Image (tube, rainbow, N blue to C red; front, side, top):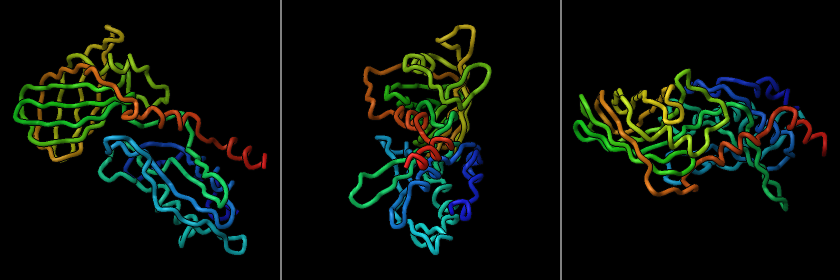
Length: 279
């Protein structure tokens, strides 16, 4: 019945949104559909990092129901339309560098506890750190929080100048390449890679990209690359140096390692069908 409404192959690896280049599956959504019954309720959610405390931001709750055992409806929309307009929707406006569409699917049934299904997979695009920056003239200050909730302070300066306030998400990568592999570095390695002195080049016009290369404190023979993506009210450009150091404050609730674990423990195709057969 699901396959009549959306061919199962649609849930396999896909370009998740028209904005992001991320490829991933939707087996969590399929697992939720396989478990659903007429007149259950569902909602979709995704990790929102633009709040001070990272949280799962959810859509409105809508009823699942069927017509003549042929068509599946979610609220007033056909399942396919709901999938295209709600599940694949880029949920955080302006975040153009990663996929912010749904990964979490809640199922509600009267007199039962809600159940949550998460898309699994071995690739992620969550950043290693995020920051708020203040640029005035040739200098810029960045307050960073990494994925583990560790705070860092970055000070940069050099040729050029920046004016404004911006929100940044950054990714660490080794000398060879940046990768979306789900295996995350340890907290100590992330701090070692973020902290230190680096060369930097950047361009900001409301949004922008900064790239820096610096000696890796993990392996002196390698370089650590940092690609950072801006969103905010900043205008400027620069080339110079940036120094970053850890602050004596760490708050795990401000990190987002749980979202990574949710995906590691998320649903794949075989698990979705095994769950249904076990019932």
